[in-house]
Image 1 (cartoon, rainbow, N blue to C red):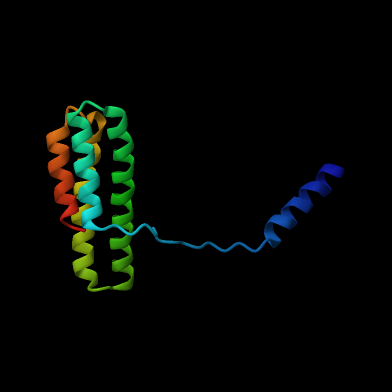
Image 2 (image 1 turned 180 degrees about the vertical axis):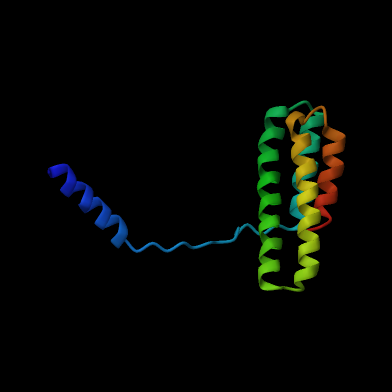
Amino acid sequence: MKRILFACFLLTATCAAPFSQTASAQTMAVTASAFTTQVNLMDTQLAAGDVTSATATWETINSMMKAELGITKGQIASATPDAATATAKYHNQVTMYKAIWALKSSLATNRTALHTQLVAFGATI
């Protein structure tokens, strides 16, 4: 009997709790120059054989790319400046992001291709 009452209490508490789902955009502002600086830093680290530092820099670059994707997606939602242009830009960035993600498995081996793809992504910022 106690179990049934406890279960009813939990159900009532769960159903009565006010739930509101909110979405927030990435707040990290990404500039083309900051992105390029990080890309060049990672390339320099890889050239020096410092894969540990390059991996840490990769995490920063990855965060910047995701933030830029979030910003572009926000432009689509708000139609700023133009939803069709923002949609095309977003699809282009997603395609590049997928190609970059496939190369990141071996930063040192894919250094040149990765740098080229990252520079292309940076040009869309």
